[in-house]
Image 1 (tube, rainbow, N blue to C red):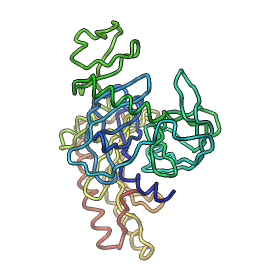
Image 2: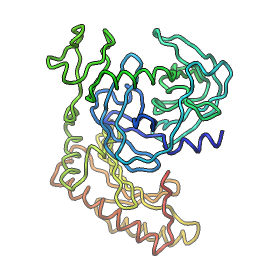
Image 3: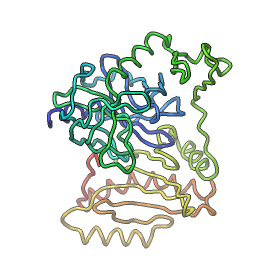
Length: 361
């Protein structure tokens, strides 16, 4: 099982949209990323990253609402391992399985279990019922057998159930890929939810399926609109040279890598606050008193920022109440956080022996 998990670390993709996070996986044979349609729903492009490549934008190529599947284009020159799809119905009740994904945005998690029922009909589709724990964020990840072959794609759970998870079997993935290749003409396409015909974006100029008249809409890159303080955050990020499309991490959250630091800006609507956190380095095992003294002295002299320690992480933060949040006052603070984060983590390592954070943190 450990060999299987290690094999999949480099093909599991984390997917982020302005509305949340999910999982996908790369199929080398087709040079595509497969995920659930509900992970990318309403987006023409999403942010993806993996063990072997940083955040990049990926276009949504095809959506199939019936099977809840989506196909994404893969980054150019992506050299990832090849994984195999299992034969259709090549599994049975009681078989050992592994569900792999990014639950709750945590990078790479694998849970083991068995197939509780090889065929469980839900909404007219045969799913594989499993007892391996899957959670929000696991959607779109692969269900893998003990031989390392993909049996299906983890799609949904029954809320309140005790490990009642359901995976769409592999033949549905293969059918969606075949439909896209045959009928899309290489253009953004989707399967009509009414007549199940595949139509591409050029075949619905009036917004209706050419076969049955069902209303169909294709998302555009500029469809996502922010308002109020969220719009102002994105304006400031653009002005200081950051790509907001790559920075979006769910609703009202933005994340940017700045040197070795990770900077997260969050609009907390419940409290009316905009919080910026730069996760720097970790406190060392030795010389802790000296580093505490330095951080406290900095807190005394800093204006608009403060240091804190979260477990072992040293975090540089700002907090602005929404009613005081305007471009004139907020832009210097946000811009300064990026500058200070890049400077402080180097300084803390060189002068106090602070520890660099591991990538997977």
